[in-house]
Image (cartoon, rainbow, N blue to C red; front, side, top):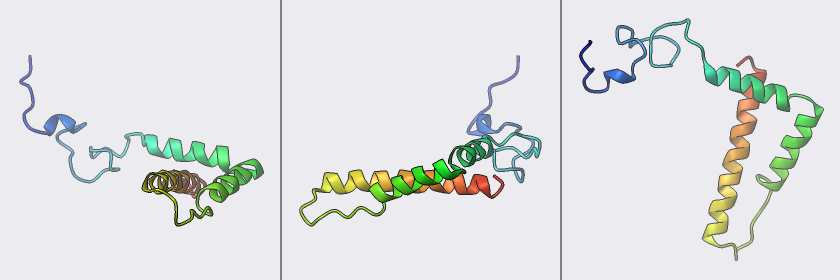
Length: 100
């Protein structure tokens, strides 16, 4: 039976390979990048004419929406959260279209 690892070492996929690599915590270039698969999926879903319509609609109801001076702090927080999500989705789709 092996000794339990101390500290944060148990986070490493391969404790012998900490530096370099593809940003997944280990140094192995052969490790899959689950984020790339997700970005490609976003690009496939939102890459065509229908995807463009969806993104345009999401931008119109969030990014291009202006709230008046009587908007509550809660409403401002809510719309900013929506805006952040739309920007995040659009960025993932764009990165997927650019090759992942």
